[in-house]
Image 1 (tube, helix red, strand yellow):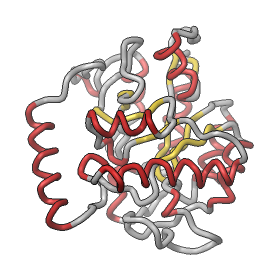
Image 2 (cartoon, rainbow, N blue to C red):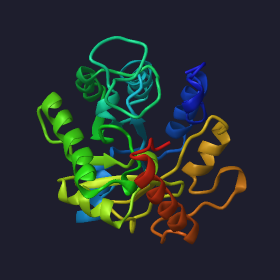
Image 3 (cartoon, helix red, strand yellow):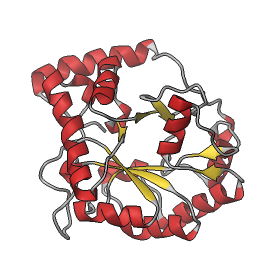
Image 4 (cartoon, rainbow, N blue to C red):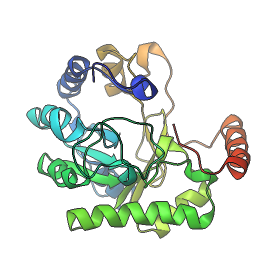
Length: 262
């Protein structure tokens, strides 16, 4: 969007910049694949094409089944979209659905999930309410994972096997729950490059922010850090800071209740 809501602005790019970034992905010579192909390689060692890259989109904003999907299709770029079912609207409207912790933003409808598949975009789940999953009770965690999966499966008429943790928040218990709920893979964030040794239920991703340039995208496609910065390669253990932040958020959630992951 050119003028996104303030709360999500950091994680959006303008349509012009998005087009330029996609052109950089095409020009780099990598082969885009949906996350299901990467997960198949990580679990079953099925072969991947040379120099693969996975493009993912979270939440389900209104542009996704329109200009975003059109820009991808125009370049023959497959992708994976993870949808927050409680935020999806029942029809055209200015804001997110009532069953989500996401702040107001223009969102797509649940019926448009099938439109995404028509453009070659694989659909995955991104929970119902977009909470910090690693702070939930076991029953609440299971509801978030299973309900979002079943809602999307009912809408699409087939299995939905892939998950994205809201804002990447996960833990060993969350990863076990994702597997138990029937997901074949789950992506975190980690702001790191994935690898052939990555964890199927904690696949690393790089975050595209509004500050990133085409040169940054080109560096990532070359397996380097943006602007010369060193970038980690997954898998790697959580840092003490990450573990401490998780404990703090868990204690806060016990007082305040479930909180938005963002």
